[in-house]
Length: 264
Image (cartoon, rainbow, N blue to C red; front, side):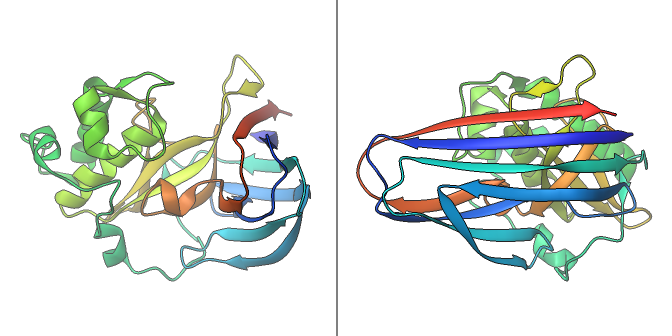
């Protein structure tokens, strides 16, 4: 599937910014499931300082915010040819060892709720991870506007609702407690009925010895197919978020995000 993507993020500040730094993870890698062409990132109200591959293999750009600006706009756009590989991915950059993806984080710590969630799952790895994905969707209802990027897997389980990143964090906590290496994935999902998306998407990948890394999207109950574009990976949202950073100065920050995905 040939997809054209445009992702625009605008920060509006009540009071001009003294200084700041943003970290962008907005460039998808080429792999066996996608071929990336003509991808660019542009910044208004700031300047790119350096670009590098982080330890997960994510293309990362550091942007300094221009002193005195009231608006920072970050745009990423390009074309991606996607292939359906049944959720199995390979040939990806990065030297991160498998054992690192078994480490819990503040967002994916497993406690009593996770322990209850994984009771009675199949012992065969492939049915197990699919059953876990389905169980998470049943336990944590998809509902936007009620959780934030700082909410943990246990927070989502306790609330009983969340969004794609919450589903991903619950899955990671459960899979790692079961002994699987598992990682967070941020990217894009093409929706058949609209070009405009609310935001980027998130799902997970789990290591199965017989297959390698296998993707699962608990929010939609499937393995990623040719509607998905992978951008960044990490232990949790903090490692793979599209944009993160820090600024110095008083006043409030107002965020607006638009994502457009079109099939060519």
